[in-house]
Length: 346
Image (tube, rainbow, N blue to C red; front, side, top):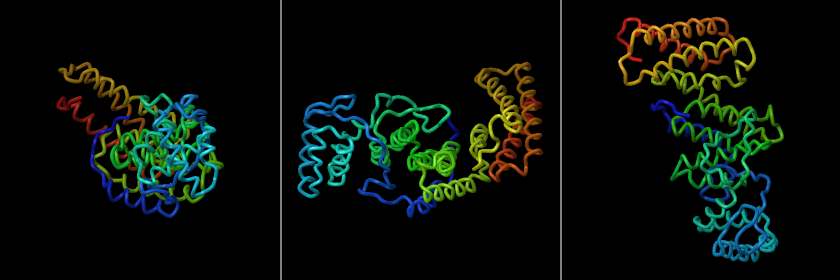
């Protein structure tokens, strides 16, 4: 998703979100973890000391390093982790990698986590948790989470990619991954996606209570409220960005799909889409009177429909939605006036 670049008070807002999250989330087992890791279901690891089978591949040297480290752990814990590793238990390999990371062997741990997490779709644009779309991440969720934390300071887009992976396990929505995805989208100046994922985190207990933790749901709800308040009044937001924020700007998902309110709002947005199609088709060219007339017509229709929506739903919209609708109307009105005068550019 592409949005217009602009400056928010990102640093201060992230500090407030982190302050809210510390009590509920901070159980870091190593210096590289900022939030807690939730152990997910196991994948299948190799059953030999050489290269891994069943889609997970370790070279012999890396496997031997893991085996040697498991031997050291065995002396401390007596938990049979070496034998579990030899048998190919994926959680044993994950635990060994985590211990290697804690001990300072960051490179080996990250290589192992990649072997566990990468499912062959690393080039895909993971869009994350969306039950309606039925995304199904096939890798190891805790390892994807570990990679998200590992890359956080050095490569935020890559960190985001792995947190998105962790949100995409079909039937297993990962609440902590949702929150971290939202935080990263905010840092990368994509407020609509930030709203979407933090809201998903906040409301997960309603749709999937088995995968939600009450305290984390409360934390995410506070974070959602904080972000919503910060977005109100940002007059440097782009028109497209404001439109993208609107569907996620109500904690209870107003307007619900397949309702009259939903149809009215999206009717207004369809006219705005048609205006944008004219803009794209005529970009870099001299705008003819016919294209300008059609653009004005669609802007006027969008404005009229959106004003109907605004008048009918003042009591139903959130404060952020009220701001966004007013802002969208203001931008549309200014565009229409400029175009009618013949002085505006598409």
